[in-house]
Image 1 (cartoon, rainbow, N blue to C red):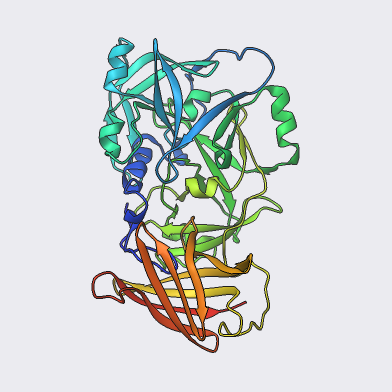
Image 2: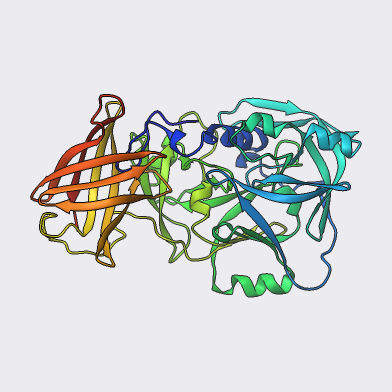
Length: 425
């Protein structure tokens, strides 16, 4: 699922290799294990969760790995291991190693579909019991070597924990602070008092044994589009072209920043990568989910979201509508365009002054993450700075009034190209 071109602003590399090449594997894993919301129904057989000791919610630490991937510590028999935590996974997955450790009882065949609709089947182990902190869950589990699929740069995991492990419970996901909270009835009521209710529904898959949550987003024509809530989507939010169009976005653009309303008072900008030939309306990214605290009641199909942190965008920063030219004052907000592989990549850049020095950040349209600018300097009409991906790549822009033109990298001989910026505020 790698991109043909990077979308950072400015953008020194043509794909996500500057972070980690895990996007394709993580999305493949998620799509391999999930189902389409059109088949959503109440499950006839759900995992059995033991009660929590005491009345306090259970706080489970998550560990951030490469990109936006998170792992969770799981007790497996008399052993413990790191598993991926994946709200879009649909089912629990164990490794062949853990299958042998738990003396797998062969169960029925699992069935699912990839994002593109390709059918997949696999073997299950029946009545697998795993521990997550004080919580014990018994469920059927798929068997897969995730470490082999994700590759050497991924965290060394032996399985996957999905929402299926928390069936009939309420959980709060706070990715910004790397924690999952299993709520009690009392803590749930207190938690959601200051949150906004969000439309949601649950898909249980073709055989009723999966559990995946979808967030409902209302289109201007009154239709509701359903976006998979996927904490292991390591790319940007994926959106089908027809869904982009219905939500008022540009379905012809590969990347875009889409403004949507999650709930009254929760209008947000979602960086989006258009995904053709996808069976879903959309798949939310971990980067987007990180911007808020989310609570989901899996027994009663209810979801709430807290305040959503903004991303750097042209309309999200208050500033002077008639800015001074950068040669007089470089502090401000810039619209940028970077040529990568012959394609224009649009973005936004902010430069400010801290402790007497110029500092800055930049974000590409359609990208969740902003990048820090290093060694920012304005000399006469020339603005220079570096982006480290992972090695320093210099950018040099010469301004005529509010518009600057120049190069990134070496200008294109080995690793570089043309870059422009226009100061907007």
